[in-house]
Length: 256
Ligand code: MF3
Ligand code: CO
Image (tube, rainbow, N blue to C red):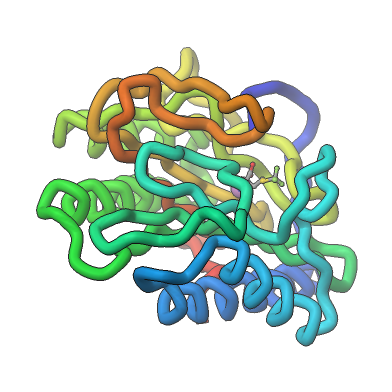
């Protein structure tokens, strides 16, 4: 979501947390299936169909479909595409590419949201390194995902990890609180803004989603009005989990 602010961060009660587990488990199932379906020769539209089928068979609806007019159930962003790539029959995956797949599911009044970046067949060392460092930056942030820490400690740790490896951090898109709305307060930047941000409390559910590039982090939006790409054409990776803040840490809800 774009960076904007600011009202209260919703704390989920036990029942809301249970519902968040359900919607996020469906997201995890889709991501797991995507991992085995991604291969040279498959189109991103075919991946979208498979994802939508899993979501609907579970009794959920795809959170992204029709969201501000978005036409699909997943975002499928290949190579220099950062986020919000629209699935297409013509976009056929090629050996050596990387693809970020982002998916949302809505059921029982609550949303789940998560993303992974996968290798298509054999990929370069550089591409592997980008995927690995992007995931690591998420987990670097998780050192501060607990009640009593401050939100921008997570942001700062993600930034520090990516910068340490000389990677670019996309600023135009950020993570977000999530629950009855896909995008709730607070925005969660992947770099440290001024101040320390809100204090984390048990029961907050957050979608933390670093978007990291191999070159400059400057972006451009394609004529479709959605797809964000790196201006310099460098590779980009995305890793997102919805997490629950607990009294002594966090739980990843988008994991089986
Ligand atoms: N994870 C993305 C986000 O939080 C998903 C939104 S895609 C959209 O912005 F198509 F629904 F916009
Ligand atoms: Co998100």
